[in-house]
Image 1: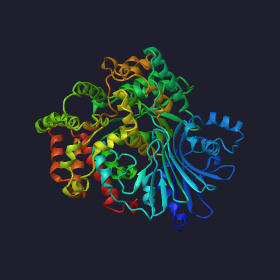
Image 2: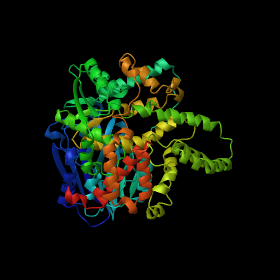
Image 3: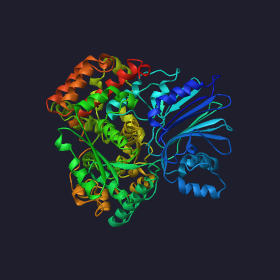
Image 4: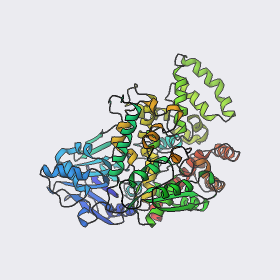
Length: 640
């Protein structure tokens, strides 16, 4: 795991100064504390930078930027390729030579052999940049699911890219300004949708995309992988499919264990993390290193008891950390800097501290359970959405005009009774919009008209998050079952831009590499071919996953109620956090008036204090205010 950056003056007379790359590299030091390197093309039109966290081949031979043995390619790369040893055997038979044991060199040899099609051979997570000086072109690529981030900006014939936005902002061509369109969507989706970021002019490469810039100024932008592959649905019986899931999981966990340094698991005591531990323990002759976190005084969401039982059951070397309000508030001082752009998910805080615990215990590689809920119908909201869709299908014959009339009459009544989501569903039905927008929605579409300041509302008047959602669904042909559509949307938006991003940013703050075996692309492609009805049989969450790991994961874990990681925004916006957030929003932040209006902010906090859960909305506004204070309202980089 590493940090990468670079500058390419593809259509101007500038040259890359050494201090520009060094400055960008310094901003990424936490991503790679073990080594750093730079490369400059002979004409100085291109510069590459790299910070290394040594995981595979700890020797100097793994140093980056790395040059291909033929001398025509340079690479900087962040990630892990789990099938690199198998690929190496094939490449060596084809005549390719190696100077190291690193997966980086395998990518170079693949690219030399297959060009951009090399990406399709890779099994793993990555963000990379490859410079071909003979063709005078720079290629950027992000892995299939978006496990690793990659940002870029194009300014006056110059491409600047990096693993984190803060490195891009260190370049004198780039200034920190808010992107109103990203803001508008963030307020609903809790993260800016790719390719947007909260910074005007700075983009993120979407998951499963590559882009190329050549010396003539031509820019190519291509999706190279999609989760839906138009393959027939599986018609096997439940037992066969369950065995198929387990076979894929075993293979994925095994491949994700490749490492030349110690590795472990974040263990909550739920089915996802326990499955990781159980399948790792099958393959190891030493204890699995496990790490857990809880919040003081929140017994309902404290999973230490289950984590301890599983650690004992699988003979793990177990570690714990407990955090409280003081840990949340202390982290707020640097949260926006670590995140780059606001990620409105309170799980960032416990992730930060459990990552710190792993680093303190000398374990720099961690397996996590992200993706299991999305693939295996693990959220109660999924079941509610599927029930709603079933009812909606029976009402398709109702004319649109009647839906409009119903919405006008019922909308205000629903809001007065606190039934905000029902009102929003009725609005979507009246406009024939997609009903499912994701598993974590903050401000509903109509609320943004009330929340935004008059000036910002005017700037955002032509934006529509419904259109953004429709664009994400667009690659589908409409014949997919609805659970498959829901999973597809989560793979396109919430997973890469919020859930995986929060894990990457919080873990890399402590130089921790996180791996996600549930998001191995072979497993994803298999699961998306399973008929939807098999996933939620008997209204049981994760029915198929539980079936697959029965006998491997103890029954007490399979049968326990679902608990979010340290709970949810409802409990993590404690009275202390609520007080901090309100004071920041109303006295220490310029977003009031400039972005949001005081009246609606007060209404949100009043509802929360009155017992109507507004945790997601408060966390959304808090992160926005922290980000604005860090990046927009002051020259943050000069103070860090």
